[in-house]
Image 1: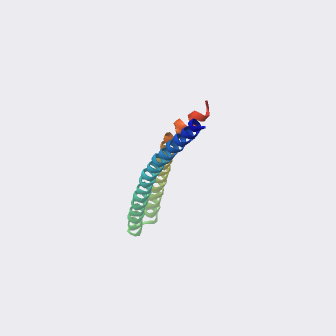
Image 2: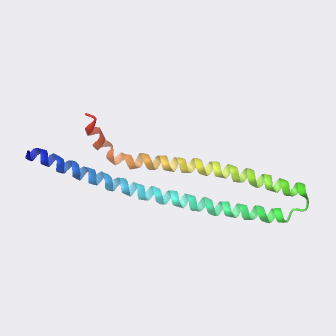
Image 3: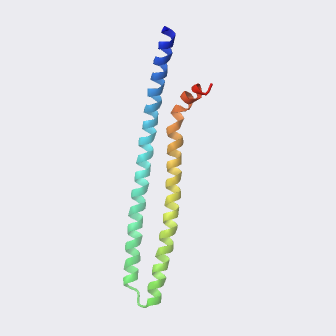
Length: 110
């Protein structure tokens, strides 16, 4: 009975430690994701403003269409790249958050 209680206490302690490590990882990853989103938002706004300035200075309809098409292509490529990067960050977040629990889950599979 005492041995069972000691094992339960150790398991509880291990789980709390794993949870704390996981929360630390979550915090760091969430911060990195937030910084990435803020940087992308700022860059996107700057690109949109620059494109609007060029568009307002266009002398012909063809020039305006060319500026708009160039902006749309750049914005699309940037959005795809950003989505890919965020996907990688979220995948890494999931992997790193799970790592502290691997040993605990491994014990149950035996």
